[in-house]
Length: 132
Image 1 (spheres, rainbow, N blue to C red):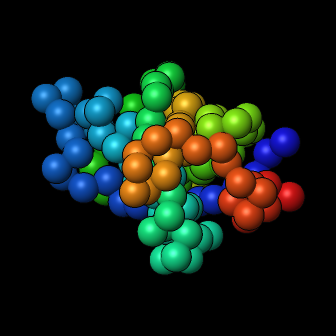
Image 2 (image 1 turned 180 degrees about the horizontal axis):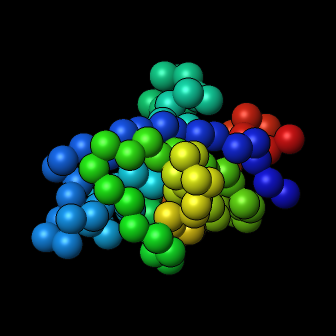
């Protein structure tokens, strides 16, 4: 099972650049999280977001190539799978100019009831939104 691809586009700001003159490693993780949140926000209603939230359990990330200030990048994200209260989301950050993969990553998420903050089985209404 795999969801449709969601693409978050960005231009590397000066604030993302580290002492080695390329994007700081932590920034890539933030961009992955930003893309995941944007994906959630574009697919769900305010009513759904009032009922449910997600928390990250862990991240795995591989840094494959550097990127630099003012470059255009795309964060590709998709839901790889889900089971019970957990979901695995994948990411690939690419530079469209040369089609190089900059980062590959995955995050394991836990689905929570927004009011109790207790793990909640992912309901069909949510899986149907993201997975065909």
